[in-house]
Picture (cartoon, rainbow, N blue to C red):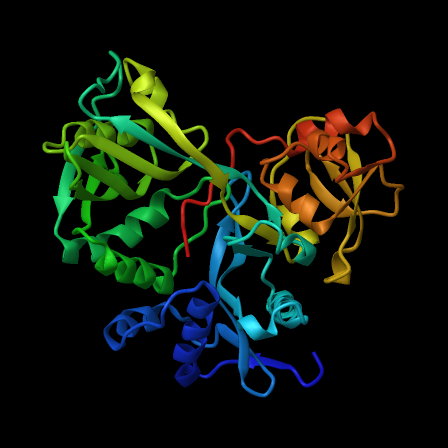
Length: 400
């Protein structure tokens, strides 16, 4: 680490940073045509680089908001494009970049940092915790029938590609209020447009119209696998719904698609009720359960004060955060909120473990059973579980 410096990248350095990141993933650099789209996913001033003296590491971020239990939206940063040159790994470069980013977020009043981890063992040491999980499932379209009583849904409209670009951001912002979901600034939508251009088949978009306006949409591609017999697959690339009617109405449309054999829905919430709307739930099969997003509480006092809590007796939880020491200390958590306190702690954990419990993805008693929480008063665990419980599992719903 001697001689290594970390600084904000200039715009003319973004392409070199992108190539370094892609190289860390064993991918080739973008072509000139590809870079024209990929460059738009960089927020001005949002990319950093580590130099010694040449560029040896990079990370980029964008500003957004995260929805927390209870519905409040707090300032958040989405982190992506993190990579270190292969000949400079395991020398503290990643730690230097993460520290610089988190200190910058804290100085700017950002309450959370969020990312998708390429490897699960990397980010816990920087205070990130796995906030929840997601699943992929497949539906046999030929055998699928909706169960009686499923809402009929409203009008479903197929959009032209150009119209979708102008319509989806407003629809998403109106309905994306589930805990764990982030707002999508322009740089994220530009990233989605660039990824859509790279899909092997055209991306189609349908919007569901409820009584109060658009309340859901689905983006998908249809591809044909050439082995015999041919299999035609509808792959959902983005599905967001704000009401049960929208979910049922969009699935009624998807199941009615001609020249489709199976539907693959990836990165879906664990509680998405696909099995409940099908007459035979076995025509839907879960093929994968994986990490959803990783969350870091940058401002622990603000984050704890902003979310809602369940009904239970107060619990004092002490937090250890050596990377951002201003967060360290005990917090008294009640049904009415959370504040700093001088009272003795019943439970103690690090920042990463707190992040795992914050959005309701994991119970503190389960984390304690795994050795992640120091239990000073066992009687506090049931109350802590009740306080941090959420009505629904968290779900990010976005990739970046």
